[in-house]
Image 1 (cartoon, rainbow, N blue to C red):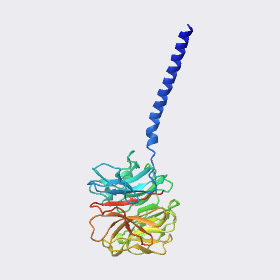
Image 2: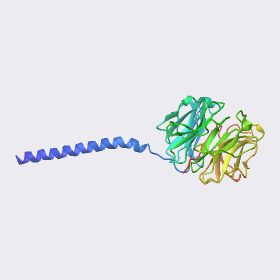
Image 3: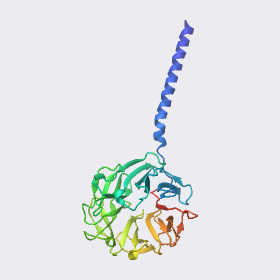
Length: 330
């Protein structure tokens, strides 16, 4: 009888252990995918887009141009304008139908994915909130908001939204003309954007403005009667870089100025198409895409803010476009 009890007791313990092990394995199976999705890009990673596959897709690489990895795989879209989140776990980007890329903002939608390409989701659909256009989406420095332009194609506004695309707040409050190309100050309390001094404006009227995130404190920073675009604060807040179109032709130059608009000087003004300045975390290096005279494709370059140490990052120069580099905020 005692042996029967011992056998029953042993079987009960073994069964309990087996059940506990099964529960533990089930728990680990449930937890592991969520944990595995929390991947962060290293501090030397760069996001960019490229049309090497035929349409534009999002890629990452390191700062020397190596370890290039494709993240998006959808031939029906051009995926472009990648922006790394401040915690470096997600990438915000835009999509248009394949073949459109950045040439028509009436066809733009806005998406987010994890930095390994998983978790893809649309946050601003085409025509959301009745907008005719949208674009130039940027993470806030703390990663809790995004800013973008949206609205009618003749009178777009600057909006701050939650990271899921909800709760839009019109920072420019229906201001006349075009209000486009927004970006954040390092403190997250101000925005830069491109606007016009008059209600009906042409591209040569585009100037750089700053504004508080609550819509107050509007300040004009440039008065050059030249088409300006894409203003960005350096991470240390000391300098603003932006694009200028001198002469109104195909030449685009990168300029810099102090936060109050003083000290406007060229970083690179060499007759090439130099586009979309993006600061590195050291506040001394500007990343951009560039079409040198005589070249057929854009490639990714970097230059010091003094205009020295111009470097082509992806070599040998490929027979396809690499554009819109983003360093994020390590």
